[in-house]
Amino acid sequence: MVLRNLNYAVRIATGPVLIGVAIVFALLASAGLPMTLMGDQQALSQALAAGSFGLTLLAVFLTIVAVQIWVFVSWHRFVLLEEYPSGLLPAFRSDRMLAYVGSALLIFLVALAVMLPAGVIAALVGGIAGEGGAAVIALVIILFALFTAVAIYRLTPILPAAAIGQPLKLRDAWDKTRGTTGTIVLLVVLLGLFNVLLQVVVDLSMAVFAPLGIVFLILATLVATLVNVSVVTTFYGHYVEGRPI
Image (cartoon, rainbow, N blue to C red; front, side, top):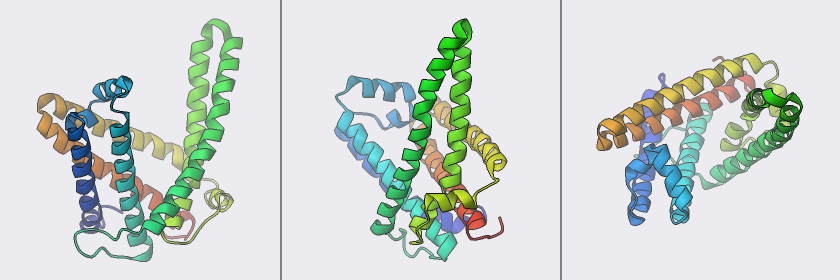
């Protein structure tokens, strides 16, 4: 879907992503933190552990989330409503973005409801298993994580629905995506490998030449954003509206 509409994908995502990068750069610079921090997991963990940069990193996180939601909503509306971008930036539809956040929070609560019992069950099973408890706990967590991923993807149609102003209930999304477990598991594996590949490219470029790493980080963010939003849009279009893939 992204490749078929590459011109519009770039127009929709580039402006918001560049604005987000500029804001993140300004926030980090004001706190005396390097931009390369965003591509260095160890340095980021150390900054979080220090505690003194908590508000700055929270502002960075919220900026990234806001940019992604802006792009997601714009892409959903472009594909599903044929709302073409005009000018350098896509329309900033705050009402649809807030509705999107609300729908995302619903999915988060469902995922939380699934994963919290997983921790309890893993601890109980691990205690019963004795010496092999660690392996059993890891297996239980992996299975629950996979189940949670399937549940999340089956509920994702409520996100594009919110973006285009056609609210969809959780139960309706669940019913519409019945029988998609195998497809979702394959999708999770492929997206996981894809994201790992992007991270490896960013890490290597950061190690070789930090400024180049920043460029790759921006490109990786742009690509990952477009791929993820395309998957969610396709789920809605195919399983809810009955469109061909």
